[in-house]
Length: 162
Image (tube, rainbow, N blue to C red; front, side, top):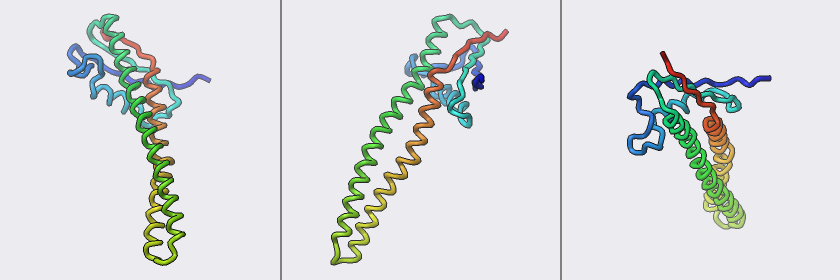
């Protein structure tokens, strides 16, 4: 069974801004956003093919620079998401630990009902926040990373328009 591909068409004119004006090795934000947004709403298992259609001659060296910039751009996004994931995981573990300690503390306090309930509520909220982030936010980042990985592996074709 042949996998379907998502085709992303990019039309380059002679003066199209491909690279970041401050760093010629980085993809421009507009192009990066266009490529990523073109993937939204499609399954993450779908392979991606990027067709760069140009009406002027592009040298092989320039093609390689564009290809490297596209792959590097989305690779950096993956690394950034991994850093966030590690930080978030540590924070979630700390919240669960503190929440558990607060719940235990609330059960040990038998003299003051109001204080016992307040501590119990704070403990439950901390555990709930950690669970919510673990279940929903981490899934969102995982899907985003799968999509970004497909973009770094995308087949990039250059086609000159007559």
